[in-house]
Amino acid sequence: MKGQFPVEKFKNIETPFYYYNTDLLRETLTTLAAEAKKYDYHVHYAVKANANHRILSIIREYGLGADCVSGGEIQAALDAGFPSSGIVFAGVGKADWEINSGLDNNIFCFNVESIPELHVINELAAAKAKVASVALRINPEVNANTHHHITTGLKENKFGINLDQLDGVLDVIPSLTSIRLIGIHFHIGSQILDLDAFKSLCSRLREIQDRLLNRQMIVEHINFGGGLGIDYEHPDRNAIPDFKSYFEVFHKHFKPLTNQQVHFEPGRSVVGQSGSLISRVLYVKEGSFKKFAVLDAGFTDLIRPALYEAYHKMENITSEEPLETYDVVGPICESSDCFGKAVDLNGAGRGDFIALRSAGAYGEIMAMQYNCRKLPKAYFSDLL
Ligand code: LLP
Image (tube, rainbow, N blue to C red; front, side, top):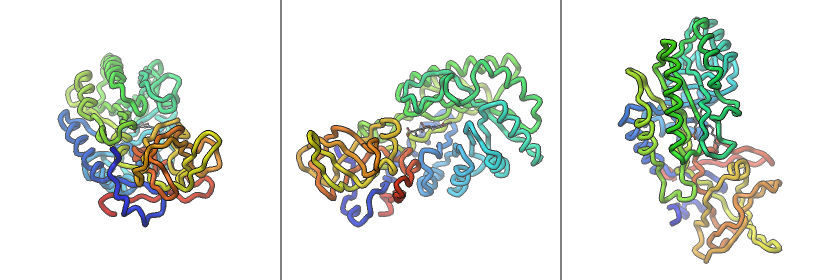
């Protein structure tokens, strides 16, 4: 089945553009909020997946907090109405002005990745006579079984504090009087479909919690990060991710201590299926042994296929012609500007609309202006 697109309305719009199905986004958020509520879990939307102002404003309506990785994201979240008390700020390289922005806005928590960072936050907070709440991002050495570019929880990755360095960090903390340790944080990777990875994360957390308890330390907050994947192959059949099973894994395998709150930072699973990149076919070019469908969208609009060899389902939403096989490419002057090889599409001609599905996460936000191209605009199903 092809996604339901208002093709008639698209005819007056300049391509390429992002099209967001806000009904689906709202349904996804309703499901997510209901499933999290069952266990009193706190959800912070990972702004990095999509920081479009309208998308953020809709997400904020469902009572989620925001997980930010830069001063710019903190600002985007505040502009969209997220309360600063629900903002967590992560990132392996926070600049001083970004830390100051977090302090000035009294955000909920800094997720800290190293001893030098702890010292800097401590100093900047002291200069403002504030106490910064921090969570330690621990690298749990759990394999997420996902693409190596988006795996983050292994020892070789740059993220987090390694388990063998944790004691050293815990030793330092009492001397830092302008920070307060309130939590521990993890994020093992993205596009994770094997829920066993989260099971392993829970068991690692139990070990870490024991290490803390041995030091008479109890943290109030446990943050499991994001990472739940979406079905790129079947965006219509599995339009809403299985939040139920996802949270069940944590509920089953991790029992919080009394008064301990559990947090999550989903990004892709919230917005991924709600967005498509819509482009027009410029030319169908006959190669020596294959056909190319040359689109007006390129990797400047959606970089995931070029960067991670990611698959996005493609559909010719204006043709009922028999299927033909194409290499679907963009106009950028690089051979990596290819959305897919040997893709079956309904027979394509100049002007046909091609939808690249499941592009709501890490699509629009990663667009760039290489080749002096325009950034793609965004349109919403309820405002067309
Ligand atoms: N929390 C932290 C600390 C993260 O680093 C990330 C994503 C998330 C939460 C949200 O993860 P999600 O639920 O979206 O998997 N550009 C890549 C994905 C990079 C993910 C980076 N970190 C892609 O297009 O696949």
